Image (cartoon, rainbow, N blue to C red; front, side):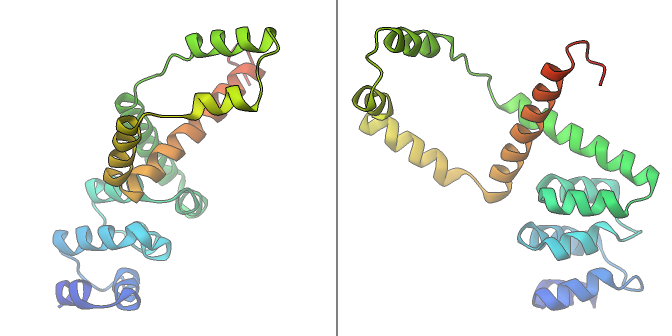
Length: 177
């Protein structure tokens, strides 16, 4: 019965099924709820708080959950669950980081500093840096089209966490906060 409700019901039905502790959910229903929770933070919280959620499904849910959901889950979680959530989020950040190549901007920085020191850095020069060839623009647009919302959110969260970690490292050079 719950499989049918999850598959055919609207978001309100899905939320009620997810919060109903008496409802027995199959793995298929769990995965469908996780997919639907991609764009529904309330549903994500209800699915994540189920005591019968398996670790792989919980991991999949956290991978796509927004930062707001992460914060809410951490606030309401038991100490053991906070550790598990932290472990999953660290793993997700590592996975995203491994797929994103570090970029070396030293040559670009050197060029801009040279132009700046020659007092030639103006709006026209700056706009010249922003021009892309038609093929580069087409490639960028194609990449954008292939990017899912959940992947974009994960990448943004990864960079936010990375920047925060780098900022705290700069504030505390010894690594001790």
